[in-house]
Image (cartoon, rainbow, N blue to C red; front, side, top):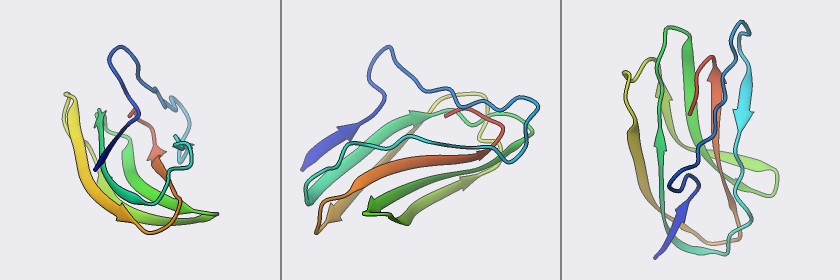
Length: 102
């Protein structure tokens, strides 16, 4: 199994949309070879304007939703972890809608 992580010690992505509604932001991984992976990253979904956070796999231009989180998850960091098996080259794409950071 291969570990795939986007947010290593000391780095994060802020996708705030203060004053904007229904904004979208994506982080897209490099193209990964087929195989078994452990996807792990940390997220922070806090505030009244949180809408959705999705974790997608992408093969070519087609996205498939692995998980969806909705609404305020509290004022602390959480760990997302999921084992996935892909039979073809792919990308991972955490995706957000609304006004929050991840």
